[in-house]
Structure formats: C-alpha cells, structure tokens
Length: 126
Image 1 (spheres, rainbow, N blue to C red):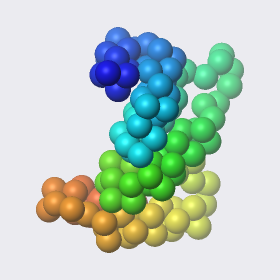
Image 2 (image 1 turned 45 degrees about the vertical axis):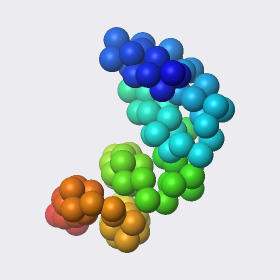
Image 3 (image 1 turned 30 degrees about the vertical axis):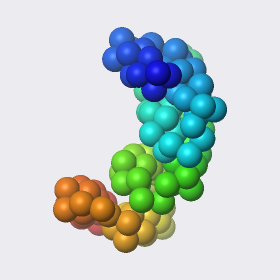
Image 4 (image 1 turned 90 degrees about the vertical axis):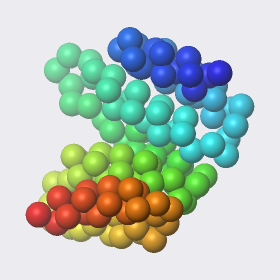
C-alpha cells in the first residue's frame, strides 16, 4: 500500500510525500528493494534549496541498500550507475561505474536486464 501511495505522490511531483511513503514501505518490508530505489529517485528529483547543488549522497546510499537487500535487483544497478556517473569528476570514478555494471551483469535474470545493463555499460565506457 505504501509503495502505491508513494508512486501516486511521485507522479504528482510530490517528492517529499513520495519519499515518506517509500520509507514506510521499507519499514513494513525491509527485504523488498523496490521502495529503496523509489525513495532514492524521490530524493534525486527533489529540487535543492535555491543556489545549492543537489546532494545525491543519500540517494546513492539508498540504492546501495537496495543492492544489499537484493543483489539481483537490476534497477538498483542501473540507477546507482547513473547517479554515480553524474557525480563523477574523473575517469577513476567512471571506471567504478563500469565495475558496478560488471557486477550487475553477473546477476541479470532476464535477457532484457542483460541488454539494459550492457547498454548502460557501453554508454559509460564511451
């Protein structure tokens, strides 16, 4: 129920409300990676205060928790790679993203997941 409510808030652009519902979902089912990913996206889409840059650190931590909860949850790898790449300031950080995608490739369950992470990896290398 909380994930559904969170998605409704997210769709309306109410990112704080969405995050709150996703956090409730995490409490109800701490072994479900989906609310961690969704809460991360809500945080990432919340505009920062005027004149400040967005801080993606809490969003990254939620994605890392999602992978800890379910190492086979490909959506967490895709989102985490994109966020880390957005924060990359040098080639070393970009290489870490490639390594993250390599790890994600080990856990793909479907051809679609494999294609998705391969595409993200190729784009990162390029």
